Amino acid sequence: LAALVALSLVVGTIWLVYFSSVLGVARVEVRGAQLLTAAEVQEAAAVPTGEPLARVDLDQVAGRVRALAPVAEVAVTRQWPDQVVVDVTERVALAVVAVGDGFKGVDGTGVLFRDYPRRPRELPLITAPENVGRDTLKEGAATVASLPAEIRSRIDHVEVESIDRITLVLRDDRPVLWGSSEQATDKARVLESLLAAVPRASEYDVSVPGRPTTRN
Image 1 (spheres, rainbow, N blue to C red):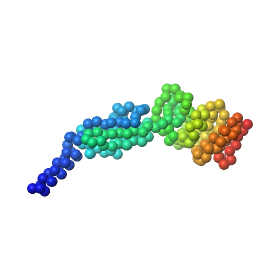
Image 2: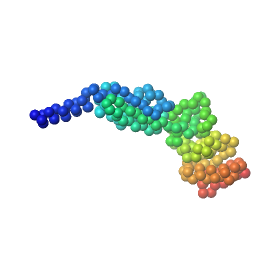
Image 3: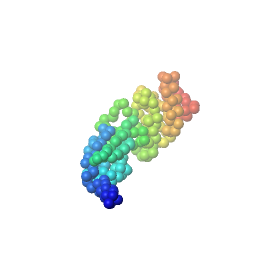
Image 4: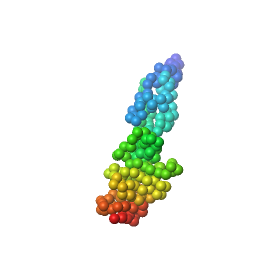
């Protein structure tokens, strides 16, 4: 009799948790979203109301939310008895790209993820030939991401002619020959030193960080 009661409790618990709607999803809470609305995240998450909370595939929910362009990272958890929590970390725009009549914000990995009707003056503009490939845009974005915030604030735009021909243009129109995005940390450190040591140079070249040059 004791064994039968114990078995009934186990079966009842399994049914209650995995098959009944008693512990079903009643709501989806979204945290961390600013560019996206909670409704947009909930729609992408597509968690069926009433589905047993224990049977929600958290990885699939996270994958659907991660497909939203502004989302950099997402964590999905269960909160008993009836809630799914979606924690979103959104991308941060480090530069902009002209698209049509407006601008698109781009993060350090080269993902375009938000719209601007006008160019934000605090963000450098990445320019490139019309036939430029996706990898080339990523190189430009990676270059901006490698810059210390103080130097980034002094950049007006980044000219990306090809993967290994990138030029930074300061807000006073002086060029910085950067080359490719390789050795970006070293180049940024060298450029910081050059700007301090030779503040009036007409051109800076850090494409080979071990042999930087300036032009007066």
